[in-house]
Length: 359
Image (tube, rainbow, N blue to C red; front, side, top):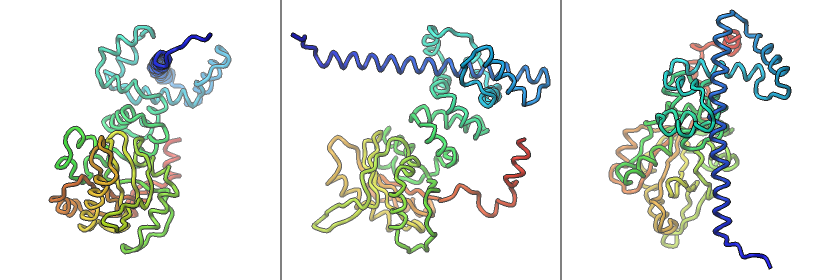
């Protein structure tokens, strides 16, 4: 007769196994960052001392392969990345100190506990994430924006690339909303951090209509590319549907796009406008949010949030439009190209010139 094993016992074992695997992965990641930083440092100092050219990395990689057959991750390209990793942080004393200490794996955890929170965050993301950041962003404070966001929101490399392309560090703080007036802290602060002033929709390929054109074209294009749109929004959004039906007093109303945000524990309604923001859009969104809170929101969930996504906006008009409304909402704009404005193109070197400068 088989013994009766409580399901709670199995669940406890499962949690211990998963926790141990995650902990082991964290330790491995920290050790790899230290290794790559110190390899990068050794390479840079030797190259500078011996005045070696760039091609020496291929020779070093080949000799490492001879010494350690089957060695992976130390190609010439990766050695170059390690050197750049060192150069990106060589002037940060705290980072250098934490990465150059020769620590054994079994004592890393005790050291991490007394480390500055900044170092913990730095060591929490992978080398691939770090490379995407320092290869794209040059200012240290801007790099930290992406490091913190990646660590806090568990951004994938793919999502991080999207945020870098969208230059999200330049768009924080300009997002007009009434969250602090309507929502209690810390929910209001979390809501502000969950949305952007500008979204890059470069996957949309439709003709630019005039201001009064039907928004359905934009909606259809977003739904056809919903995975890419979710990536531009962030990790915690789930898509619930488009033209989401609400029945109020036996009359049907339809929300363009409806999402659910796990972190905020709230429904998020998006209304799409291809032209400029108009004050009347706020009143309509206020109505939608009232209906969502009454008809769709579950008792444990937070108040529904509305985002009006339009092509253009003036923040002062948005401010006046929101002033006497009682539902949390904000206004963001979208752009469909990451290219610089036409007026800036002549001030920038062309791709071929840039390539020559980098060779």
